[in-house]
Every structure is written in structure tokens, then in C-alpha cells.
Length: 327
Image (cartoon, rainbow, N blue to C red; front, top):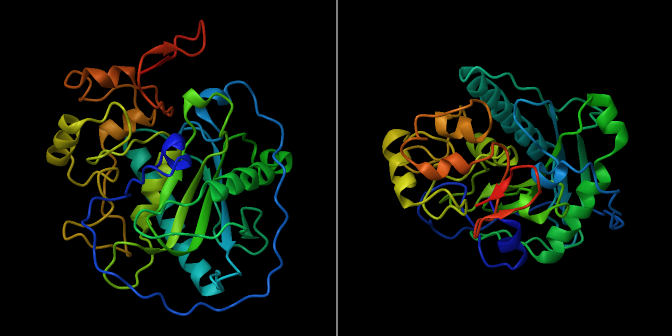
């Protein structure tokens, strides 16, 4: 996951897993497409005041719509074929089913609406991206790209979509047809009403694979969980309450935790299943449970507000009377 501040300054890129950097690659030829550039969308009015904390996606226990957007870069011939889209839909279905099963294991019910490949689904669309896609290991997409995606998501968040699914909670899965390290742009409470719409950027190919390999279902699940407030639990996490001591604890206590790594023990992708778990710690951060065994061990976890991210720094009362404190 990338913080807004870091991404906009192009100063930090965090990995979705913990595998070491691997060898260089050569992408296969992509088909070309004669696709006219789409107009730059105009954002809709700012949502309700509670969005200042949560953003467009709130708690995993609440009904949520996930809209799939396939980005085509006609300038370089990098587009989504029907075959490639079908593969992403298979991985997405596996990720959602895994999330639902893991939440149920913690006694919580989820209700996620997503693109299952049905013809005419309102939860999928294509878009001719104007900003050049960078991809790569760091996946430091340009500020112009992030601005364009903010505007695109605002346009796709329609009253019709909210009415059809009966929820105001909407997140976006942006599929990039290049090789890169997938990341999520989550809303931070410190930003108030800015950067309201939350989205995952999921690359077609894994930047760390030795051969040309698609992103794994585990990566999809990892990034989607960021939308609901799950922190990265690996070394280098930007979440202020995840320090080296907590990371070491997770590595020893929950070695299969999905927010620790998306790879198998050998550092390889798995495509037939998601062989990971959702620990009580992550379930607590997601608001699936009210407590976790780690609270007495790591006092900083008492400041966690389920489903909400903060940049950290000096404590300040962001909303007078609300009791919400940034830490």
C-alpha cells in the first residue's frame, strides 16, 4: 500500500510481499488497438462528512461494491484482451471467496459485490488512460496518473450504482496491462475530504517473478484488504503502529499472514488457491473483531481505529468532540 503523501511526491513504493528482487524480464508483444482517448472525467460533489475518516470504502462487515476498471494504454499497445480479462476475473473471484471465508472464520459476515464476468455487468468497464504507465518494481506511477485515476473513480461513483446495490461503500480495482508491483491508494483520515475515492492498482504481471507471470490471487486479496483498513505487516510498512518488534512478532506467530507476504515459503506465486490466513491482529484492524491477543503486548495497537488510516506524527484532535486522535 502507498500513502497518499508518499505517492504524490514519488518518494516511496511499498511491496505487496516480502520476496527479494528477482531477475530482469522481457514482456511479450501486446496487440494494438485503435481506441480514441477518453475525456478527462469531472469529479462529482464531495460525499457525506463521515467520509473524512473512512473514504469511499469503510468496514469489511458493511456491504461494499468493487468496480473493475481495465486501463488500456493505446499509445504503447498495452491493452486488455478478453483472455487476460477472464484471468483477472478468475483471480478476483478466488480473492473475494477467500476474504469471505476468512471473515466468517472470525464470526463476521461480508457482502462484497464484484465483477464476476457476467455479460453487461455494471461492475466492469474499460478506460483509455491518458498518462503513460510506468510499472516496474517500484511502480512509482506519475502524479498525473494518480490525479487522472482520482477523477475517473469520482465519475464512476454514480447515484445509480449506489441505488442498485443499496450501499454508499464503493472501491475500485484498476487493472494495468503492464508489469509492476501492485499497490493501493487508501484514504487517510488526515486528508479530510481530499482523496476520498479508494482504489487498488493491480498489474497484469508480477514485477518480482523470474519469468512472465500474472499477479496472484493472494496479491488481489492483500490489496483489497487495504481498502478496508488492513495494514502492511512486513518490514518497511508505512503504518505508524507497525514497528520492527511487531513485524518480528508477526513473522514468528503468524508466518502465513496475508498482510505479511503474498508468496509461498519459497517465494513463488500460487494460482490454484490462496494459502494464507487472516490473523486475529488483522481481523482487529479490519473491525471484524473487537479485540486481539496482541493488545496487551503492543500498547500502540490501542490507538488503532478499525478501517481508518492515519499518517502518524504528533497527536492531534482532528474532529473536535469525536474522540478521534491521529497518532
